[in-house]
Length: 137
Picture 1: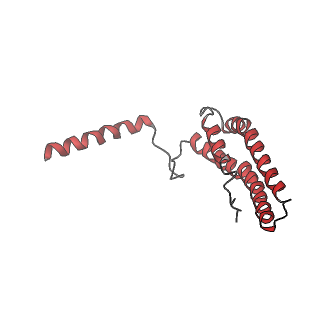
Picture 2 (picture 1 turned 45 degrees about the vertical axis):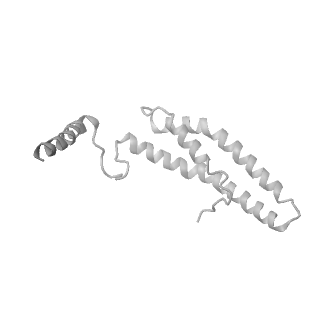
Picture 3 (picture 1 turned 120 degrees about the vertical axis):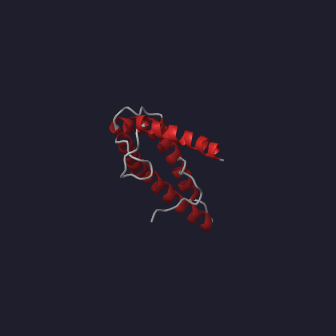
């Protein structure tokens, strides 16, 4: 079971990675997209995680036991969240990149998505159907 950060600190790193992924060129290979994504996002993720971790480690030096426990737990969660962001989220981005590269469906991974050239005739049929129903009524 993954540790959940009680403060929500570090969770925004996922959004930083996804934003960097969306800025990559979709025509590039998945390896190049991952390299560009991590080159752009890893510095900011590391800096924010290290500063958050250090602030909670300093918080463990307080004389109040409840604050010490909270800061120790939060520091552990931030460290685990950082490792999670670098490994698991990166793996999911790579998997999504291979899915995009192979033109797989967004939800049903085992099905190929219909290319736009083939789906255009379906769009015409969908537009014509309400017109046909309107003429019947």
